[in-house]
Image: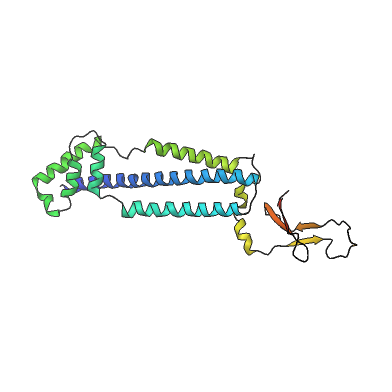
Amino acid sequence: MAQPEISILTKFVSRYRVKLLLGRIARTASIALLVLFGLLALLQAGFALFPWTALPLVFDIAFCGSVLFVIGSAVFIAVIRSPDLPGVAQMIEAGSKIKNPLLSIALELSVDPRSAQNLFTQEVYKSAMVGLARCPGAPELPKPVVRSAIIAVLVGAWCFLNPVFSPRLLDFWNLPFAAFARDQVSVEPGTMAIPINTRVTLRLKARDTRYPSCRLSIATPDGGGLSALLLRRD
């Protein structure tokens, strides 16, 4: 007779625990996203002014680190730091309007199968069922979490949709992998002999235009007169 009652109580607390863990994971993820998008905003502003090819690598590392941090935190919260059902019941009682700990007591009594035949246990189960209607079905999400999530979404939308800054950092997220590709350029007019003190115009044409910038180093045949120029995409 008491078995259906404790089953209902256990399912109620179990659902509350799932929502509690999801809220904690959401709080961690919102903070991580806020930091990530804030860093992306700074990198985007710097990339528009100085399109260094190292900045996409910094973003890739920050993005992968944030993903690993969120995954690791989720595993830690859901597996290692997951509270037991009596502990969750105490949290429910602390946030509800009931003034007795019958819900947590009922779950503690349910651990011993022999107590189900006890008259006291059955009364605890019934009283806990009565107070269940006044218990919250889900934990309240803290306001700082909501604010940080909203700010993270707004900053992320600004980074993804802002048309002011160019080039966009997100368009070159895969730029670090270009180090494994073969660069194809052509130099015009190529090898030629010219008189001394004669001016000549050299043209360097890249067959691949996916790079936001490049650094051109020029030196004389003997290695002297080395100079470097930062060339933009345009």
